[in-house]
Each structure stands twice: as structure tokens, then as C-alpha cells.
Amino acid sequence: IAGITQAPTSQILAAGRRMTLRCTQDMRHNAMYWYRQDLGLGLRLIHYSNTAGTTGKGEVPDGYSVSRANTDDFPLTLASAVPSQTSVYFCASSEKSGDTGELFFGEGSRLTVL
Amino acid sequence: GQNIDQPTEMTATEGAIVQINCTYQTSGFNGLFWYQQHAGEAPTFLSYNVLDGLEEKGRFSSFLSRSKGYSYLLLKELQMKDSASYLCAQMDSNYQLIWGAGTKLIIKP
Image 1 (cartoon, rainbow over the protein chains, first blue to last red):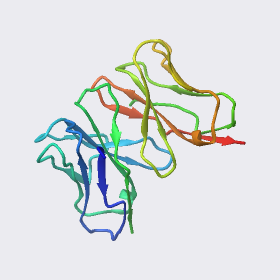
Image 2: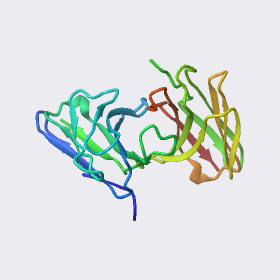
Image 3: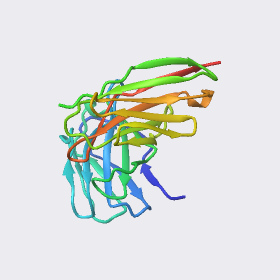
Image 4: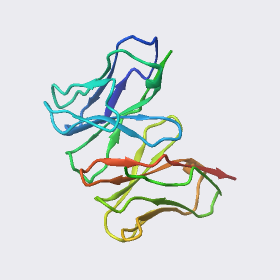
């Protein structure tokens, strides 16, 4: 089934540990995004990639890094996790950047940092 | 910064009609999106408006007034499965989405 796959679905992590959230899409979309969703707040953009080989910072990039080595994969890394990074993380894609078409979301990764 | 305002929670009765409002900043506007998100699931696309007026899609319709910075999502013939959060999002001048916090819609029998 075409779409976006995220892993892990859920993770509990000790503060200070390094963590990579994986995201893979098979729709050959050019643009990919990482959002975090916290209770009472809208989705906030962490990082994005308009095409393979390029990345950009979103609204809340501090403490996170991304890479886009190929079209399909867009991992998000927390170099040294802190409790404020406890959140639900969604990976999304769209056919191209600046696209007024829909975003397709993965099922989310629930991360708890203790 | 840009603010997207929508009610936190609404309650409606099965079979009825409900209107969920959203207001946004009018500067740097490239369209208004509505997404549905069931609890514990990913958001899914409902509608996109860039011109003024009403767009109808089955039981769901979305309205936009660019001069007023206002949109609404209208849900007709409510079903229990419509219980979800509804997210309003503005596409800004950089073609990035600015999201509201979402409106949790509770449907009662």
C-alpha cells in the first residue's frame, strides 16, 4: 500500500540519549516534512526538504537534525533528547514544494523523554 | 507571527449540521486547508480553498472569505464517525502551512 511509513510507533527515551525517527515514502514525492504535535498547539514544522539533497529549517528546529540522501527517506535525529521533546512526531510528504495540494501524513511516532 | 484561531471543542447531535469556524491573518495568503484527525491517527486532507466562496464535497463543505480572513467547515448529516479533531491551516507567502490547534468535535447520539 502506497504511503508513508514511520518507525518506531512509540518510544520511551532517557534524557541525553540520541534517537532517530525514521520516515519512508513510496509515492516519489519531492517534498517531505517533519512536524511535532503537542496538546493545545497546532502542528509545528521542525524541518523540511523540498527535494532530495536539500533541507530547510522550520518553526522549531532546535535540537533536531534531518538528512535527505534520497527521495524516499527523511530521518529525524534528536542528538541529545530533552523532556521538552516529548511529543507526537508526524512525517508528511507532498508532490512538490510550494504545492497547494494535500499533505500525506505518516501514522506518527509518540516519543516520551524522561 | 501568524495566528490561526478556531474553537477548542464543539458538540453536536448525530444527524444534525455543524459549522466549525477558522480565522487567520490575511497577509501572505496562499490558500486555506481543512484536515480531519481522528484520535491517535494521522491528519487526512478534507479541502482546500483559495478563492472566495463555498466548495461542496459530499456531506462536507468549506467556505472562504479572503477579505475577512475567515473560513468555515460545514458538516451535514452528522455521523458518529465524524467525531474527530478538525484542523484549519493557512498556506503562507512561503508556501508553508500555519496550523490551528484544531477543533475537537464530539457527536452525541
